[in-house]
Image 1 (cartoon, one colour):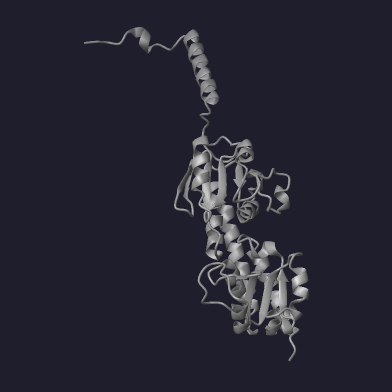
Image 2 (cartoon, rainbow, N blue to C red):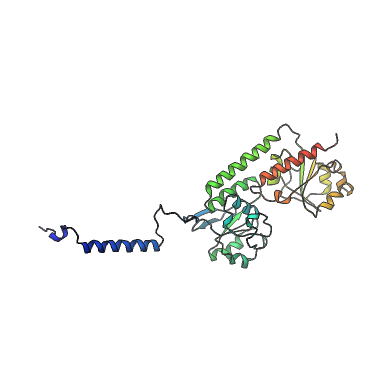
Length: 325
């Protein structure tokens, strides 16, 4: 019967123990060099390295090897969401239309629909947020071969606002912050809606442009903000998001209040509305019930929809108070 040798059952020599210690130390150094850290080792403030995947609003599955660390946002409302999530430092490129002070020092890649690809690639993003409505497939075909993910974002109604918060918070590993932000927005919108109970409900039209008249359709976040602010759209039956109407149809509907963007280019027009053919036939013009709203509030379906609803509520209330008896 085989018996192990006596030496194998004796205590290892000092030299043997020293050799094993050196080998173990060498193994730890090698593992550290390869980045094989234990679960309790802090990640030095960087985004976790776990892969993330989210289906975008164009129906494309966006897969990143790790949460986005360098983001180019071609959608100003997405920029606002990232800033509100505390991830503004991840933004390395913006558009000419971004106004958030937190990203003012970031390079612009141009317009959201026609960015400079050379500038965009130069800032080395790992994620680009594009307009889903504009069809991000062409951008995707150019950027994905370079290892840059493209997320198509839809921005039509308030449902899209919460969808953007949910998707973007996951893409930058800020899921908890996204939940808090969404809850806060819902709570504040509910408070604004509650504050209008018992007040008159005016019919309102939001004029995107005046020549020819373009209005916000009933399926847009603008029309939904009107409802939260205690009003109703004068065009609940129009198809499309931003349909064109005739001035004759506007006069036929006779909305209680006209709302326009607060733009310098529209100021002269608003001043001469009382004498302008067709427009002077509107009772809202005759009564001085013409309201202007900062355009960034009514063109960005992001966290600022709370401010948009609050400002619209207050200005509509003032317009109705000023109407002659």
